[in-house]
Image (cartoon, rainbow, N blue to C red):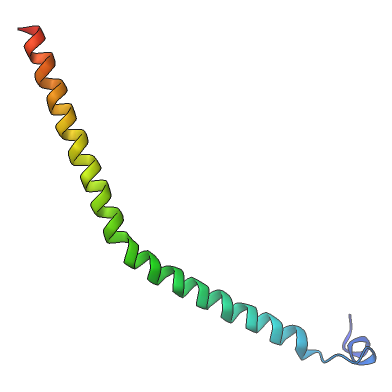
Length: 72
């Protein structure tokens, strides 16, 4: 639409721009909140991964011992 048709409908041409700017601000705020949340959660995720890895290594070590006993 042209500026003239916006004015004819009683709308400001800035309405669309203001809405876009508001949505952009909200998007930035959400991105910041998600970034902060990820920073809080990452150490917990790292601990879980480490525990799982340690358990798997222990389990694999046990499997290795069993296999070595059977091959003797």
